[in-house]
Length: 199
Image (cartoon, rainbow, N blue to C red):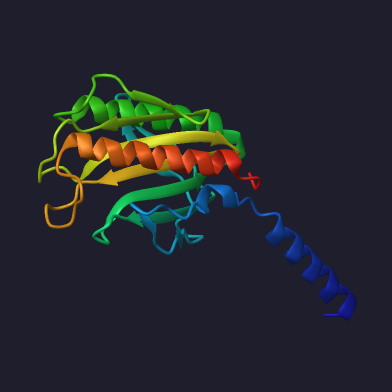
């Protein structure tokens, strides 16, 4: 291969790499608070960056994924209470993905016992709308206390999952305690998004 051809190939390769769609830094740069401290993030591999199926009342549907991160925030006992997943959709499928994620939440809410409301919870913090489902009780059999999503644009979906930890690991003993921690996280995280310029 000639030097000219090699240089051209190198330029094409670098151009392709730098133009690969990526999750914006704002969505993964929140550092936590006194109550919930950040842990090192995990970025999905190329093999993991592919569509995944979720159940709905009309059967399984796909949600695209071209890039993604997972970050956990530990409580005061140093156990992961919040899992933040930032997923980047295929630009052509973002509208369908958001509809499918909402349909999945509605299905989970309808088929899971002891949920807080019959319809999806809708919260507003710092001009960001948050949709989700939440448990009405804290019990051992539940893996999660709440599952929420934010659609901030930029072909991005933010998933916020709140873990139901064992009594020796958790810092919330009642649903009221959980909601206080949950809503404080929503407020702090969305304030970070509102003030962040890299989005």
